[in-house]
Image 1 (cartoon, rainbow over the protein chains, first blue to last red):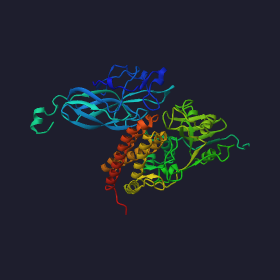
Image 2 (image 1 turned 60 degrees about the vertical axis):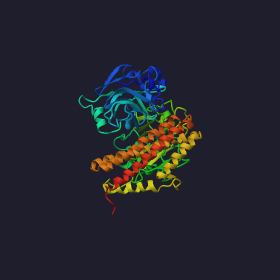
Image 3 (image 1 turned 90 degrees about the vertical axis):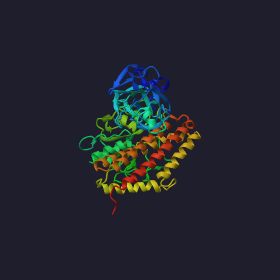
Image 4 (image 1 turned 120 degrees about the horizontal axis):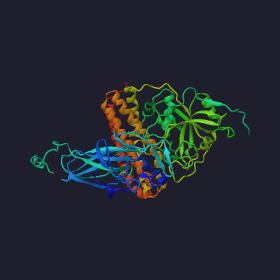
Length: 197
Length: 354
């Protein structure tokens, strides 16, 4: 799991009696804490474990603004995210590798506000109500999506730089290692290939 | 002044209108979509056929349903210029009998699209909270019981009766300025309603037909002028709009950002529907290049998210938002250019007009 605590800068979830404390979008709608997993709990979505953020206590997600998020050093195939967007959004993330390589990959996140999974995400959580600043609204659900970003290079990943896009929110991240036996070329082989890493 | 109309029931024939909704579309496309569905047409085929860019400086209204049109306020033709769909804004001729026009339309078995202020409608989340201009479909009027039958596909989605008093309050609202909704308030509703004519016949969507409209719209993108007679059109118009947006924001002009949200919604909705339609047709006709062009147009819609949300969150300090707007509008212009190029490529796979 990837530690996001230092980067959290937005309060997306609120409690029933203090809905005005939340502000996921420009209208200050928010996820209802009562319909989400407990803050700090370990959850599993699509077979991927995540550390659920501390909802209801303050900042609970990262509103993307170019933050650099370090990952535990290692080789990975996927970066899994719990994320939601203020309207459908796609933008790029930079994958920074330990050998100095940097590639951009797409991060696509569907709208949190009663919308379908336009980019094929897994619906991680869908709440039966939406919090407005002064009331709890039935019939409008808030969605938190499970999305993933590929890590194409077969070399160690150091971190990712999130997009500078205020519409995209990341709640949790987990990196997934390659299956055993598929770790790619060892470093010595890469050097024999004559490639500059 | 008195009215001679006895209380009566006016209702369209058959079932209430079906909902039609897309997450990037607004109440404008949703209400027209319901009208088209009732007439037996596929809303996506009608509302997704055109893809253009048009900005009319000084015209933008603080309403969810604002859409720039070169056809003298005809929103129907504006959102579906390649089909016979038309509409005209109406207001009551006789203030003493404001419902006369609605009665006549319903008696003629036509749905009415009414402008409302959400603040007065019990089924809207903004009820008694936020003033915001919106559109709903009216499919019945029961003056005997004091009810108006309305349909609203926008979540939480409602189809049923509301008290006539509530409807009249929403329909006649001044929709005053509201800090909770800076983008869709401060715009008088004024008992406006859209008199929609579906028209016909509707052409079948064939490869040849699609090629013709794609070619026409692609030409508008490349020949449109930054200061044309209808406004700022095409890629040149987009360049003008984005440059002015950034410059005005940098100068601290709040109007630049206030207009961005409603104006951008229309352009975003249109791109999303066009892209979805091209993807669908590309898959159905086994033309991957067409489906790919559709995805490229959808990327335009997604780039609008970055622009609109950067502006929305920066509304209190436009100058501080200027940098973000510059970055996102640069992306938007690239996405438009890429999508126009992708449409040109798709045209090579479609029939050449005779």
